Length: 339
Image 1 (tube, rainbow, N blue to C red):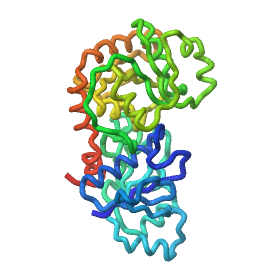
Image 2: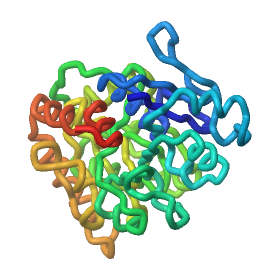
Image 3: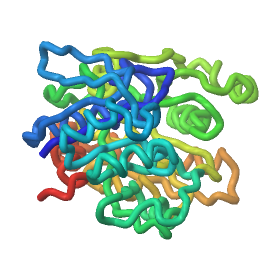
Image 4: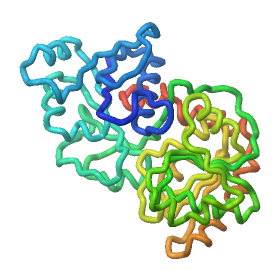
């Protein structure tokens, strides 16, 4: 099988050293495809890989190629079986025209909950859409998406032995949608320290919760990249996951990365059928189902209980299940329609 993995204009590279969820997903798919024995070509101008490691990069994007051009004809001559792309490309007229002339399947993962695809974008056969949770599948029901957990990788992510840690860690982008202030309150209720890793996306949000983020039990660590990011997941005792009441998580990376590293997750949820339900089970974490009409303090107390339950799980057991559930090769085979 010959597979093309397409990049897109981004402020991050492919693969990114730190933050960059969709970019990390595309890299995981590329790695999974190689492990499955596919002939993988990386299409785009922002791939930063080692040619001597066997990666074949074509620095072009389909939407930039003119119909009937020699460049597009050359791609068609490669006889691809499958292209895997960001969710926006199949809806982009220029990209779609070029893809249709290439004559292969396309598969994508819906990484944004607020995005409109024109009717007929996906047919469930030649063009396929995948969603993480039942909630996301219902949002995009008209396009017939299939359920599948997203896998994310960085270049230096490893599968070393899982270790039982002690620290509470929250990791992700720091903004109102991700609501890390609730994780801070939950840690405070337990009398435990918590470290927050990630880039600040919303200065106003941080200022609104200045008292929480400046509390003595809180450490703002900045963004972890490369091997340090991998170590953060591996060495934590519990990864604490939060999000805002009105936010619909589409393709969260934190859950899979935590479990693959052997670290249990204590997750906040405001309703059933979310990514939390899709990714976690009683052997890999604990879920705090909070009342969305209650205040943040009440939600934090529920989350604190989940932290204590998750902390009782063994890293080795969590890691074994996590590596099965979030395996890049298994993920690629699902996207490619293989067994």
